[in-house]
Image (cartoon, rainbow, N blue to C red; front, side, top):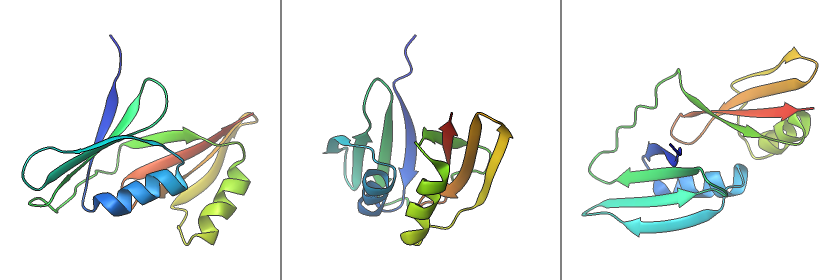
Length: 120
């Protein structure tokens, strides 16, 4: 079995696309209308994609607090500086559970938790 994508419902597709492209660095792969008031966008390289779904009729987004997506970065310290310069608040961390792993968390524009990890 192959994992294809992870879906996130978003309140504002343009704002979310800008965030995931400019901040996270994901490339837009496909974007299309999916019915009245619904638009879908897929982002990412490789096998696994991120799917953003925006439904104009359903603007209340509930991302939950116990789920996050993890993205690897070259340097946690440098990426934290990058985010702070763009006004993005660090929600928690950095944490270093062992000498080889360091990470922290932020929220995307919808309140979804993202983890950025440096593996040495």
